[in-house]
Image 1 (cartoon, rainbow, N blue to C red):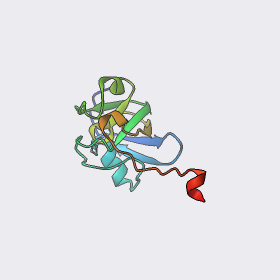
Image 2: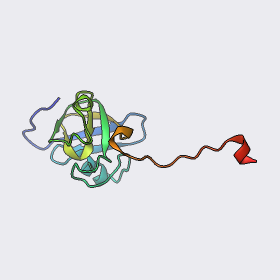
Image 3: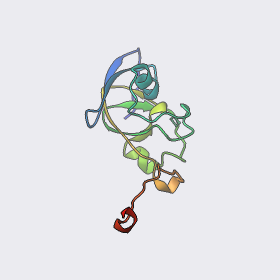
Image 4: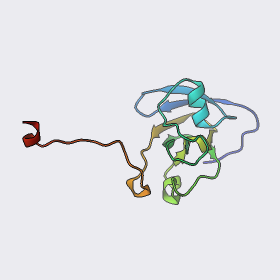
Length: 121
Ligand code: FES
């Protein structure tokens, strides 16, 4: 999946469901590229690999990745193309999808409320 970039290239990044498209220079990480394009499809947190909020799955394309914390990206995740957007650099056009944090990490998703019929009365 990783290849060395010899000069700055620009690649097209598309989100799986067609929600967004933006370009990314090979010299900036994918999260910065998204922010430069004023898109918000990827979660933004620490911007340095420490929070896991920018987890995505790369469905197609090549990228180069910096080391990623095993707290957020397991070896199995990495093998499946799940990465931190702030730690990868496009090396081809990419198709991506935001990837929620697994509950096992202690991540607490936004609280959802489900009310029974009795509570609705
Ligand atoms: S923004 Fe925190 S890990 Fe990428």
